[in-house]
Amino acid sequence: MPLALLALAIGAFGIGTTEFVIMGLLPEVAADFRVSIPTAGFLVTGYALGVVLGAPLMTLLGTRVTRKRMLMLLMGLFIVGNVVSALAPVFGVMLAGRVIASLAHGAFFGIGSVVAADLVAPQKKAGAIAMMFTGLTVANVVGVPLGTYIGQSAGWRTTFVLVALLGVIGLIGVAKLVPEQPKHEGVRVRHELAAFRNVQVLLAMAMTVLGFGGVFAAITYITPMMTETAGYSASSVTWLLVLFGLGMVGGNLVGGRFADRHLMPMLYVSLGALALVLSLFTVTAHDKVAAAVTIVLIGALGFATVPPLQKRVLDQAAGAPTLASAVNIGAFNLGNALSAWLGGLVIAAGLGYTAPNWVGAILAGSALVLAVVSSLLERRTAGAEGRLVAGSSPAPVAAPARH
Image 1 (spheres, rainbow, N blue to C red):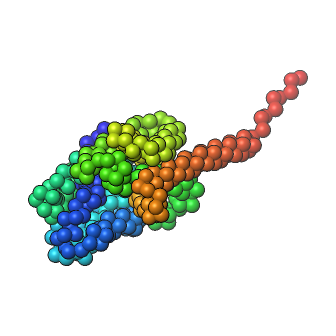
Image 2 (image 1 turned 180 degrees about the vertical axis):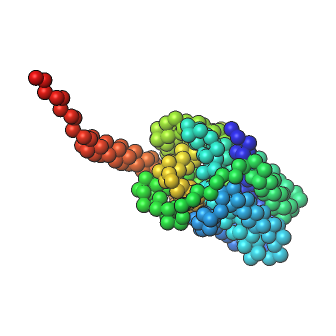
Image 3 (image 1 turned 120 degrees about the horizontal axis):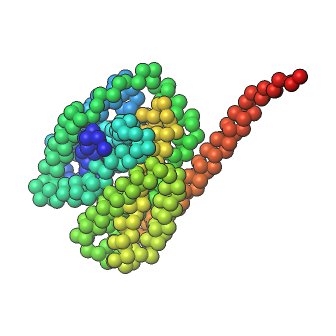
């Protein structure tokens, strides 16, 4: 794998850390700004919405520059956002800093996926994408717990300063290691938008929303589920999330490896198994050991879908894949927001803290159905095109008569 993938992974590590570390620092931030925890929660919501909106916006703005230069600009925006957050005098400025940083998120992963895929041979594209996303998964194992510890010990502002420094390292890495790929002439906004007329692109994005949404339906409410149902102490949630992160790392690498060989079968297995494990979580959540094992499996199966889904979008939007790739990153965050909202509804309805697991299972199962539909449509289209080609082939030339 080229060293350029390391630079992309470092940037992904910083982005993943800043996205999730705020969840562990909400009490400190709320106390510092003298706001309630629900109000401080807008720092999570605002970031997610910024990713959804920023992914297409920043990608379209970047169509006039090379992908390397756009990646550098995005890392610069990420650095500015985290510095603003670290120095924020009031809560509103902190929220603005979070939104600024989030605008770089979707476009960085979207453009980065295209760049990573272009760096390797065609049969290794999903593996290259997985290597970049390894930075995001490792952030949940190392960056988020470490950032939470530093924030609780030395102040939350210190965490955001260190995250900004990670952005500086990522920016230098992109500048030094990512090759200057020529700008694709003739690719304009209309070409990028044309990809969304492809039903297979839209189906892949819907799979992203539902499939990864299934993961976050359960993980969003992991703290009350583990403390109230499984019987863990509040301090144990940190290492349970580390287990989840370890599962993410393993699942991401396995998903990338097998997606290069058997993309759709990989999606069938991972989405089907994810729906099953989420269903079982309603039972295993009542036992400490079984709950811990299930959390690892949810992380592994959830992230095993990421490389194949991202590659599916790139394959179906070939010719102008950048915008579609970035929007698919926004689809992951849209799924997170949707599933968290649905999970909150079933808890508020009095169905218990394990009820979001059923929501997640239904979402993952729905994604599996869409995967089957997508594959059937693809086969039907290929068969129709094959018959068309066969029907239009020239008639054989008759052999000359013998005298």
